[in-house]
Length: 338
Figure 1 (cartoon, one colour):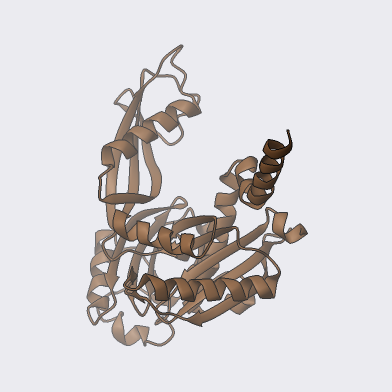
Figure 2: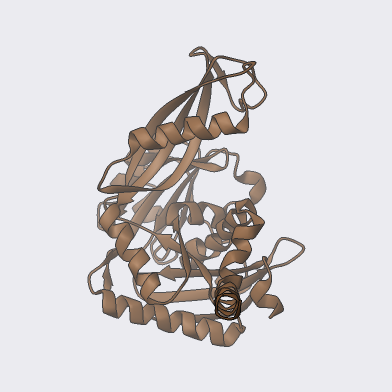
């Protein structure tokens, strides 16, 4: 029961090219994660990130979660899962907000400007799955990193969004609903990968990362704690040329980090170095020892992202999923007898 209601207990799921893995872990006082249990089953029903047979995919995820619940003793109420979409797009959006009162910018003004940018970028067949501010503009002339407390008449915000197909996103939500998971929170796998291999103190630096999986090649430019550019390709023989093009597009960083399923299986020197005159090295995940191989980078990183997102959620929201069934029973009792 203590684990069930602990806000430091995190449940995550990753649907890979060959296996589906569900993990429950507990955040320790030193910042590391202790694995409480997990489940792994052969993947079925999904091809290259798309659900082609919902019933088979549901059975896989449900079985992996069931095994993880049994081994950890924790009921999966809220689950964070890695999301990829072959049709995912990287979008730049802008919004603005007029400042009322004495002209001091408040957090509520930032939220409204952000909401405007998201609304202007909205499209009926797309769903925003990642959004981060890239800069703020005061009165159309002064660039600032943090506008709260600054005085002005107008606040502008620039944002970087990753958008997935609404139908694709909806299918994954439906999958977890059919698995009887009350709360399923999607996380772009590129974000998980970056958090999985970059120490916290290095997440502000400019890093070029490639998650080389059996189904996808993820290109990630990570800087100032956020994804600054992203590209997703199906894995094929053109991977080296795509790595080179992405490297050139993003200012030719001095080093390339490669992780994922194929990072340890391929000879990086033979495949990448002839095309790119900078070092390329395999980056292993920072997390529990059992998730120490390159193929677990996005899964290990998902724990870090889930922990960060849990801290941002209101305390009442964090506990809502745990107490939902209790509240429903109490309400029914009160209505029946009083």
